[in-house]
Structure formats: C-alpha cells, structure tokens
Image 1 (cartoon, protein in one colour):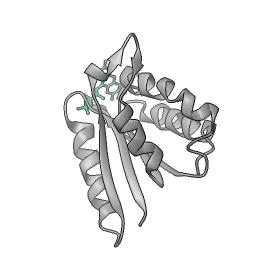
Image 2 (cartoon, helix red, strand yellow):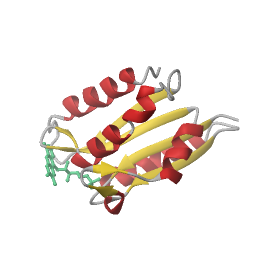
Image 3 (cartoon, protein in one colour):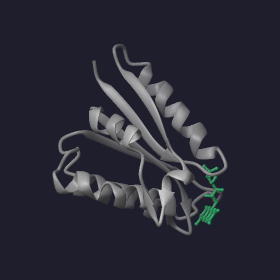
Image 4 (cartoon, helix red, strand yellow):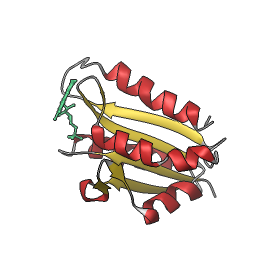
Length: 130
Ligand SMILES: Cc1cc2nc3c(=O)[nH]c(=O)nc-3n(C[C@H](O)[C@H](O)[C@H](O)COP(=O)(O)O)c2cc1C
C-alpha cells in the first residue's frame, strides 16, 4: 500500500490548506495512505528542527511532498531548519528513489514562488529522490 507523507510548514494556515488538499488528492487514489506532517515552531531549537516521530513517518513513506510558504523569495526559514536537519538522512541517502513533490503559497500573484520551488527541487535531487 503506497504511503504518501506531506511535510510542510505553515505560519498562518494558507499552506496548511494546500497540504490538506494535496492529502485529499493523494488519498483519493485507491490503496494510498496519507500522513500530514506539519512542522512546528517548538520543534526548531537553535535553528535546527527535531521531531523523531515525524522523521520516522517520513522515512517510512514511499513519497514525500514538501510544502512551505514563500518568504522573501525562497522557502521559509522553518523549512530550511527542517531541510538542514535532514542532512543526516541525506548522508546515508535514506530517501533515495522515493517520489518527491513540492508546493508553495505566497501573497503575491508571482511573489517569487519559482525560487522556492526550485529550492525544493534541489533538496529532493540532493536526496536522490525521483
Ligand atoms: C517573512 C515573510 C516574507 C514573505 N515574503 C513573501 C514573498 O517574497 N513573496 C510573496 O508573495 N509573499 C511573501 N510573504 C507572504 C506569505 O507568502 C503569505 O502570507 C503566505 O500565505 C504565508 O503562508 P502561511 O499562511 O502558510 O504561513 C511573506 C510573508 C512573511 C511572513
């Protein structure tokens, strides 16, 4: 049974709404399970995210969808704290060959979201994801 995890940060709820929609879409495929993994500010200490339970969910997933608001033309600092904290996973290529996808939300019609999405792609490529 394919497992999809949606790892996302949302300060004000807009990206959360997108995460719910992504989860509903993926969950609409027969036999697919979806876990929403919302990254929380209290799990970020000294600039690094840590939540072993959430990380275990991501490690067990077949696909990880990354979501973040666009902040100053890139992914949010909270998403960066999460991405950097997952460098240990990168070191052992623990997510290699998992499916990756990404989304962002911003206030502006453009808002420089492209750079955010490119940042998520580069992270996925570093992990050897598809
Ligand atoms: C620090 C900060 C920087 C932001 N930078 C941008 C930006 O570069 N482009 C843009 O269109 N919106 C920008 N916004 C607006 C957010 O992208 C927008 O409020 C988004 O909906 C927040 O998502 P959330 O509700 O999931 O937290 C910024 C907001 C904050 C707080």
